[in-house]
Length: 164
Image 1: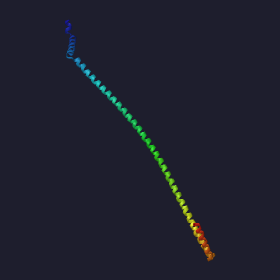
Image 2 (image 1 turned 135 degrees about the vertical axis):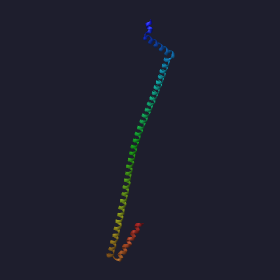
Image 3 (image 1 turned 90 degrees about the vertical axis):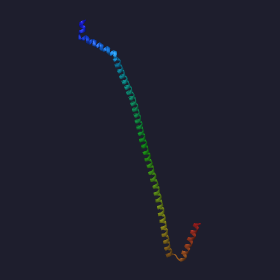
Image 4 (image 1 turned 180 degrees about the vertical axis):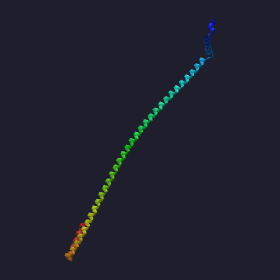
């Protein structure tokens, strides 16, 4: 056994055992376990935080997607309403133009009718004036004073009868 005690391997083995005993006595395994537990707790906390952040991010993404869909729908509604308003305005303008053309046509027709009536009146007046002038010339040249007086008297009585 003397040989065993003197070998370096034996003393290295004893030193290793003493080292482990010292570690156990000083509580190194507990410190290591505590450090590992602390690290595990920290990792668990970080994982929970990451999970919570991921859920929040998913909720925010869903919210933004919902808002985007709402905005797209609202934009479509605005475009649809604008098209309907434009069509309504186009129809109103078309109707307004048709009404204006109709009023102007009626006014033009009325003016034409007035001008025709005025022209007919002027033609009758001119014809009457010419007839009176011609009759005056004829009466002057071919009728005697007594014949003229009788004709005037007859004309006055005829006019009086028409007035009554």
